[in-house]
Length: 233
Image 1 (cartoon, rainbow, N blue to C red):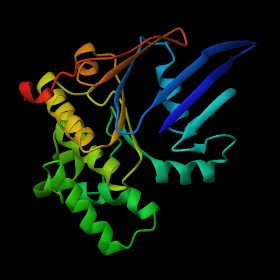
Image 2 (image 1 turned 45 degrees about the vertical axis):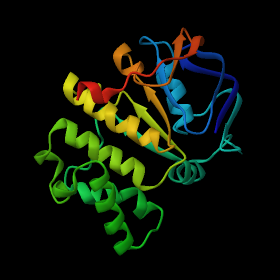
Image 3 (image 1 turned 135 degrees about the vertical axis):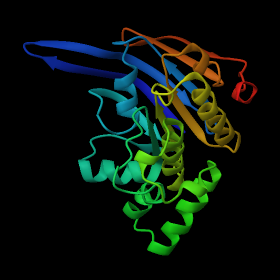
Image 4 (image 1 turned 135 degrees about the horizontal axis):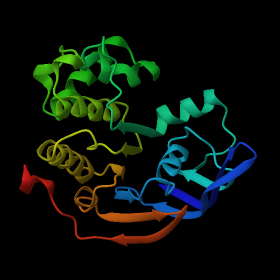
């Protein structure tokens, strides 16, 4: 599903260059649930941005579902993101003046799905995350956990190949975090490929594999006995 070979990324810092990713080799099979961990400055956000086609590598290879991701202009990158990827963010990134259903329907609008089908799908995915009765509420009327569930429904609505979750529990209390991870685990149980960037060990242990980054390199990549979140919910 994801294949990365010898990936390098540097940023110019005035007259200096900061080498952030230093030869990353990394692959993810279809249906995996992978945690990416690392302290601030380890390169995990840069790696996620490249995986999400929000940034490009300086060198190396990135293949997504057999498609080489390289030298994309913004239009092509946006098309590929809409086709392949769903995003879940720590800050939810919901549009405040749109209802939960309208937020969920947004990626379908960009995929040029018809209005009636968009509406039906958005309600179906809100039902999937347990929020059908909140479909017509604005984000300001939702709790943090409910906002994240709407964000997950939005990510799922476009039926992406891969879900990229950037600190999905970072803005939530422990109980709500476990409820969100329970939902993510159940989505993965259905065969969805999910990458979770987190700095929280208990959240990482709810994945099936943990990849540790340090100073721009992978220092550990191991499969783990998954802790099920439902026991804490």
